[in-house]
Image (tube, rainbow over all chains, first blue to last red; front, side, top):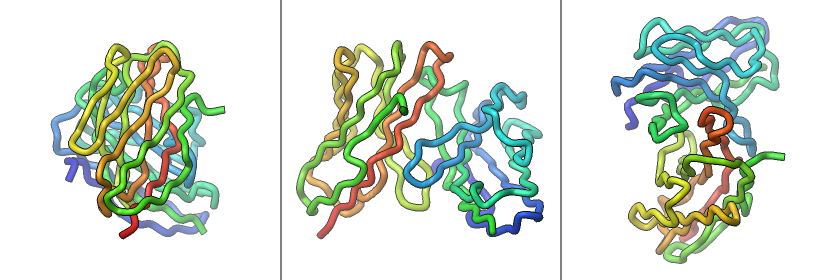
Length: 115
Length: 113
């Protein structure tokens, strides 16, 4: 286990549903991330939170809405998704912002299918 | 075109054999290069991280090399095991973009018995 948990592990939703993905880290880190992973494509960074403040938002459609209530929890609220949003959604955390030498620890991901 | 290109896209080898995965990048300047292993249904796990001044880094049967002049890195797996079956992802930290991580699409390795 990496110390980062995600729930649910699998989610199937219709285009009109509203659902939320949850991520929790038990590592005492202060930065958390959401990534989207589609088949045969590089990981796409969606959002970055540092000390509970959003520091990066990579042109993600408004149908994805992140929330970081504290440094241990991160949510991704989903509404009126499209079938092309089906993917593996990965959460990660790091001690400081990743990119220097701060190691990123990933959760197991949520496999999302939009019908 | 992605700034981090990996080859081959997929690879099948027999258990016990060695293999080498390639990563070519155009990110410059960069602060470090990482290799991750991602098992099916799991998140990526770090294997190695090398600074721009390092040439090689080992982690058990995994050895990563880096040639900053040619902007190439390789991951060599020795005496492969069935558990090595996974996707291997190369990631470069781009100084120009505030040390943003640039991910390759990965190489899918399957080890057969």
